[in-house]
Length: 388
Image (cartoon, rainbow, N blue to C red; front, side, top):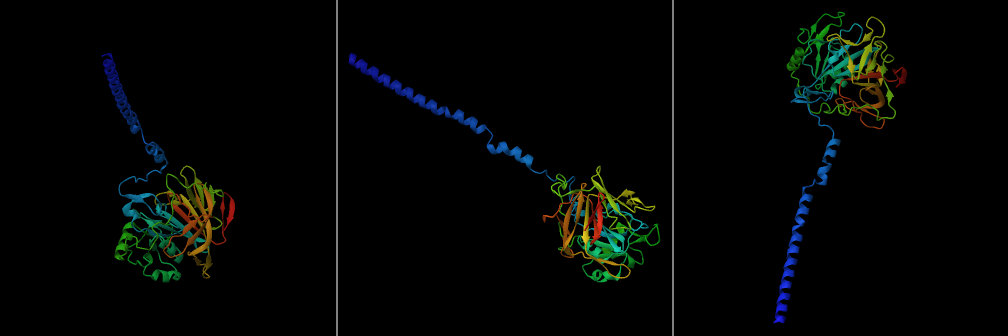
């Protein structure tokens, strides 16, 4: 009997032990779940890094208003309608007797000698809607036409020498010659400094001519490069400090190259622009002023373009070689300058400017002045002569 009781007790103990082991195993399995749950709720490694990546990304280039895009001419925000419409190129004299209206609103301004040391200006206007009086308008030259072609612009001029006749006669040259406008449908005479510099035009006349001539307001396919200048972003402007050989340029003086206008540019630290001055002697000495707005001409970018030239005749008419891959120049912005090289390889192709490492330079957002300098002429930067 005792033996039987002992056997029963042993059996009961075994059952209790087995039961205890089973519960321990179950609780062990159950304990895994609470450990897994917090691991899954923690942020994943890539989620943790996201803010860093976003901080390193460039700011989104958001237009200030609906329907605005970046201008191919200035990189400024402009209405899409304006950006997609062809600009105008208008010839303006630059003598002391010139009556200059509207020049401060031009987006790009060219200056080049035409006879001996007499310079002429050509402005490029992207938005030409509000020109109530622009000019005065004077004659053109064939080389100005080639620079006008780069923008697929309507070239507005008051005649010109026979040297440009063949280029004017081309079917692809869409121009407005006010010299043959006998009825004054597209221009008007107005009070000016003399009787020779008193022909002007305005937006409504320009638009009427374009309509009468059946010209297209939209850019013509393959007639100009969609990306003309290469621009730095406004968030990361080009300070030129990435170049070891940049020079300080608070004053850029073109008097040696343009001895009749004696123009020069002073860097304005308050505005970040180069203010233009000319006619250093005589009653017109001082800032170069737009009579229409009493505004001084000022530019964010200044390009000096050394160019091969020839004298055509005894009258001193000049010719400049617009198509070239062998000439150099200088680029100035934000109070500094670097040496550049330029190339133009086709009539409608853009003139492109490269640093000494062969990289296309980045202009800053805003207006640009392009000074065409005769091969071999000099100019001064901060009083030091630079010979091309």
